[in-house]
Image (cartoon, rainbow, N blue to C red; front, top):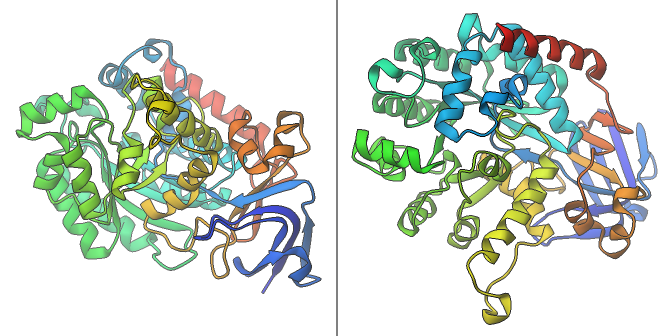
Amino acid sequence: MPTLLIKHAYLVTLDDHHTELSDGGLFIRDGFIEQVGPSTELPASADEVLDLSGHILLPGLVNTHHHFYQTLTRAIPAAQNANLFNWLKTLYPIWARLTPDDIYTSTQTALAELALSGCTTASDHLYLFPNGSRLDDEIEAGLELGLRLHASRGSMSLGESKGGLPPDSVTDSEEKILADSERLIQRYHNPKPGSMTQIVLAPCSPFSVTGDLMRESASMARKYGVHLHTHLAETEDEEQFCLQKFGFRPVGYMQSVDWVGPDVWFAHSVYVNPAEIAVFAKHNCGVAHCPTSNMRLASGIAPIKEYLAAGVNVGLGVDGSASNDGSHLLAEVRQAMLLSRLKEGITGYSLSNDPDRKLMTARDALWLGSRGGAAVLGRTDIGSLEPGKCADFYAINLNQLDYSGGAVHDPVSAVVFCQPRQVDYTVVAGRFIVKAGQLTTVDTGKLVEKHNKAARRLVNG
């Protein structure tokens, strides 16, 4: 079994004891961590040895919400200044032109960006399948690039003719959705520790699927032991839609269709009240916090401090690249910290007037980006650097202009406070996906050329 020795890094384990070592490393065998500790206490040799002097080494980041296909529709002029519902109505007709090759190319583009930002596990939410597109196209692209993938079989069944938001052209029948969901679980889902591919069932949103599909999806997911995911309580428009169509606020609607439990996580969850936060906590539901997307679409600020205080698992998501325009997960860690602080500041009280108020720290934000994300996805084999866990990590050379000064004072906080840059190393299961700042599993130049060509065709028709 191949071995890899990493030594002489500033090591941040994010274990339960928050262990940090100024000269630490890892000994890895067959994709799993065998030893963690000071460099002097690790084996002297391995099949491959990497000296990371001057680098900081952290657990791989976990992305809990994305739409890979949206890399093809970044910065579309007509959608640049729209709120969620109008943004969607502008983009649905463009997305209806997607092809299987578009899904493959956009998946590799998004995962390449994520890898260069320190991400090692990504959950994607693909919820429309025009022109013969399948989730298989995404899974194939993900396996080739090399990140762990939680591939969500999304769906939309409630078109405009039935009172939903999307045009009928991008919806599918519920019979087809459920049959394909079962096929994908049986073919691809691997629940074992270290798995590279897991399937998630993910009806898109309250305004694009029926209650029957929500219930049937929940029943199937629990039959096979897979997780459930959907958008929820993202905007006030959605809240009004749920009240008018279902007679419930979004969280109450989820309860009515059996969508609460430790196997469920929701994207956004901005518009919730204290009683609804308590529902999440009681049933161990998770939240994918997407700060940049919420700012981009002027959706609001999710109550992350309140979620964490109630014991709700919170992870981070870059969300789709048409509402973020990038897939830089380390930048999302920084945004989460800054947005949390902004929310504290707009309450109208100074910190000095309330000694119990505490700002989110850089280490808090990094925890959300790795340990929090792992908990949201229901994985115990990733998120920290400990013996027995997956050898998933990223490293950054701190001897860079971006970090000069900051890394001297506090290298961990510098990674978050200083302007994020691309990482120097990303390793998944002991395999280098990024090495010395370069992607190893895809030709970036050819990918950009292919991606731009697809984006032009998609938008121009």
